[in-house]
Image (cartoon, rainbow, N blue to C red; front, side, top):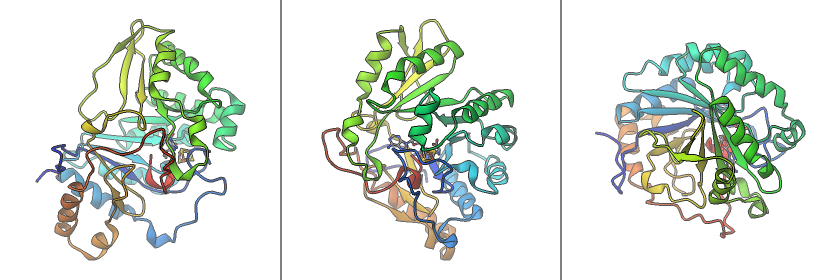
Length: 326
Ligand code: SAM
Ligand code: SF4
């Protein structure tokens, strides 16, 4: 039986985190000191991640996004991807990365069956990029983007987390880049992950992001595919490039939400802002396949109809994005 929640939404998209560790320390995502190192046994083995993927696909998941932490730092990732990409019924295998290791891995990722990459890029200024990522090198990520295209992958979608007073003056420059290169940039509302104090000072609503771009370029609404997610998408009238605006906090995309998440520790979550969680690890390690199937089917019924987060709320989510995979 397919995964269907209590609000009539078919669940067809799995965001699967393969590690909570990272080679960057983005200020909006991770504490400067990183997150406490997990005991090895707490992190799912690749065989277990593969088992989850296979079961999820048998239950109607069509799209899997590999995320983290930084997925490209986990050893053994590429053979794992090559295995899951052949699971019948998995129509779309994609991966989100910070791009730091992309130049060396782009060809292997393509060969392993990854169809498209999303690359996080929050500034086109070397110093701002270094400050946001606490030490990252912009040129390395730009080389990674070029390598992906040279490897024959579609132009990666760029994810920019917009922070007022930090990088919001680059919104138009990012849009211009999307227009010139014919690629897609997705502008993500800053979310209050990991109890970041003062996040509201840097919060810029999606509507404002849209207006800044629309006042410079002619935008045409673009329809998205069934598994495309919460971005409101637009094309430029004079370029194949486009933009997406992800209003996770202020927006109302919950009605079309088709996703569940599983963290590298095997915790399934039905909504980024809900407290529900299902620990799949004991079931994977001691239970049967049927136990995992039944638990997932029960779990999606707890998926809330919509989240309660608003920009005015001083509510801070207790997790780091690196732990949950964004
Ligand atoms: N390390 C990879 C990367 O950076 O693309 C994958 C994991 S990262 C947690 C996934 C996505 O979450 C990234 O696009 C990142 O920008 C986004 N993200 C992390 N923290 C966020 C926050 N507080 N608000 C909005 N987006 C956030
Ligand atoms: Fe690492 Fe990605 Fe989080 Fe930045 S957003 S710290 S790259 S996991």
